[in-house]
Image (cartoon, rainbow, N blue to C red; front, side, top):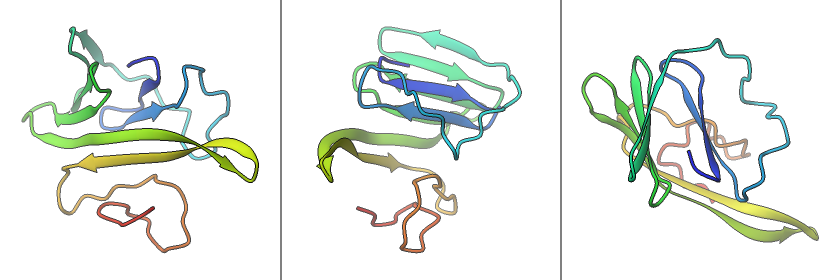
Length: 133
């Protein structure tokens, strides 16, 4: 998608976005995200403003200008979810260089959950509208 973002087409309805803080490819393997998806058909379209990836069910548009991502229903064009922002802030943690990660989303159905934000000892599995810092 861009020098610091990747899109993985996992299925017609599951697309995984990976942002990273540097231009270096990620070297570690995720212990959580499934890696063995069957190949799925998709198309891409590049313009000066966006890069779009379309499966049988979803269209994802990546803004070249600001790196934001919008997910749309392929048939209705309705916005399913829009990434409002993402950032990586360099910090020191116990003397080690690392990053504080922030990501915000807009939209989505009221009854739809937002999962995959990591493990916290606060009881939240569904992160939609959760006040997590």
